[in-house]
Length: 477
Image (tube, rainbow, N blue to C red; front, side, top):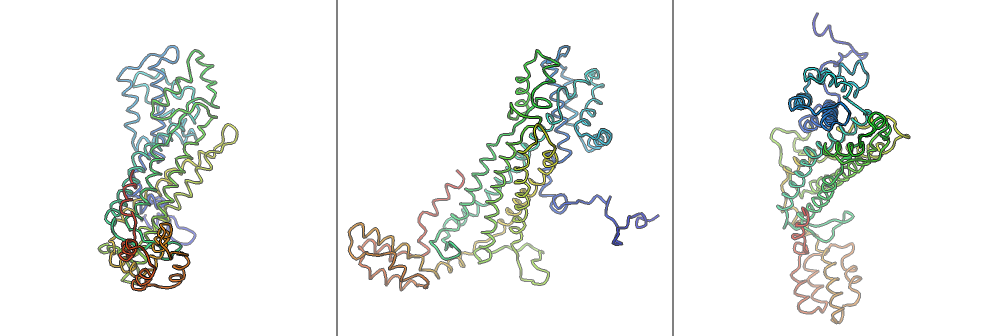
């Protein structure tokens, strides 16, 4: 029978694509290359690997510290063999785990059985009851999620975020001394430099990066309702709080001493808030750069062979920034939902957090994808200094601020004839285009001191930039 005859037909008459190994979502499809590094930390397989890691380390800790009567420290070979269950975790291991879970209909119980199957060759078959000792599923899950999220942040998200800031600062340094007409409320305003305006975003993004770098990753291991009840009744002589703290911190996490059945996820909400804030600032950068491209302050370097429009051959569209905007919005929709949902739990436990946390990787994926797009977009920008200079030269009225401020200073210094500086400049410039000649004529008629008149006579929109070039140094501190 042919492949065509084997295919399932949909109600529309089209052939079904089910079973063809195709991705449902864009992150695992067309954008896979940008988001694939997250698979090692935030995928279902990575979560299961981390669950095994936590279970194995708990088993080792209990043995090596002889927490239960009758336990003896493991041999080096046994310890290495147990940890190899984690380091040797493969696609085949994931498939075996899925087969077990199909029977248990419980993911963490399947992990327990998966490990128990591997104890006999290590001479530890008699210790099968020690696997998952005293634990509720959330003891394993909260630690596993914390490990995966921490690794994803350290190894994927933070390097991407830092690389983005480096790219912004590279362009900012190139534009450090490029004077630019500012626009407040979309109208001509006091000039700045293009470099300083880009550095503002680098500074803002760096603040959020620092928040993420200082994030806590909390974990707990304290039983079914956070009371150590099963632990105490089974081994009343053990200092279970000390054991819990040592074990959690030994995993490289921060210990949460007081919880319900679940670790209450406040740290996750805090982390997602910082990443969402980063995303929102980056979204602002995208809209600003898009707008600068629109008024031709930036020229986009065409990609060889690329097409900007199916019908307009001239188009070079700012698609990297538009793509990033959309992905940042999706990421924040998820991060904000996670942040608000995860900190809520009915009484000692409900399952809303379990379903929600399965989307953590998607939230990170859209953020990482957006960062990648912005970096690529920035790499293909050329600064149109000629356009920027012309824009400045057409707006001499922005010097009105400078003139009236000098008049104020002159009045304070006792120079006569400096009354009503704001109103006089407002009458001259508000709603009018004023050229260089008219402004110089106005300045000459004011009766300023010699020094003040000389400063204003030499001033142009391109030189009225204050300390802008020197402010870049604050961006990466």
